[in-house]
Image 1 (tube, rainbow, N blue to C red):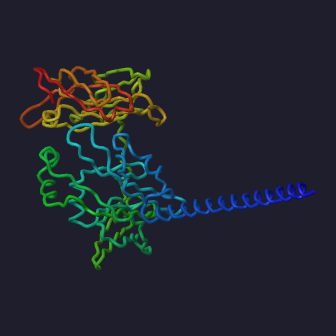
Image 2 (image 1 turned 90 degrees about the horizontal axis):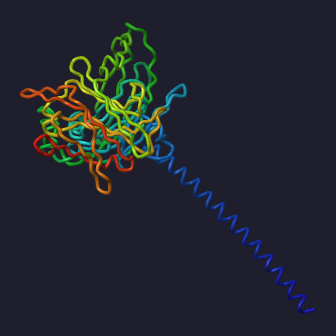
Length: 408
């Protein structure tokens, strides 16, 4: 009898403990859920204030970033989101880009907005911002730009409407490089004067306002938009845009007319079996360009860059101008191989790309097809193409060997 009572008592106590444990588990899950919801709410609130967070639509802004201007790791500095009338919305990302694949490792600062990415040398950008205190970029729908870090408020007013408070990022530091000889060579005399005496770092903020500008018939004036930044201590800066006659949309110039038709072609196959093709272009008014994509190449799918009358001095100093393409049809990116292509001076005997932990990749060279002109000397140019694994392509550095054995 006692054994039976003891057994019943043990089973009752075990049942009580199991019930208590289940209640504790439910409480823990509820607590974790509340913490997660609170964290998401804080992150959303932080994104509204700082511009960095899940509510700000980061991936919408990044759709506008070309592969040649991707942010460097940790380079995203400010992200803002603004909703306009009619369900229209805008995402603005300000970031420090990867260094270029050639020459001095200057990391440009870029703004990515729907359909466009603007990049600029940090010294010229900082010099203009110090002088003007506000750098206004967009002048319509939307209005956006940069202000010095002590700005407390930015308002945007369209003619006849009430002022609209712009979204303002938290203050952040924009680092400025030292003025080395190579970096000075990238600036003209006016830009060198602007950059003289700049600090090594500058605190700035980004602003964005979704201004709904009405459609204006051709021949009538667009509304005047006033952008006003108020700074700590009571100072302010005002800029006006708009008020111009609406003109007809310019006739689109086909890319074939702008950059010309292919003059030379190169092809190479990557380790993943993808066949890449690069073309050298020569157009009107001494326009020289290059492009590359999965073969067969065409204007609709190519990763294109070009310039008007490239200066010979550039190729005398650096030897080549290169770009990387990992574009596939449909806007996708190649997971296996990528094309490194561009222009190199015609007296180059070989171009080899090397990097730590990677096999050297020798580029293919075309016959000379274009001329870079300078004040005292002109240089003939070739097209080059190298195919490397995507995992190492951005780490590879070029080694140009000229006729006679000179290395650049």
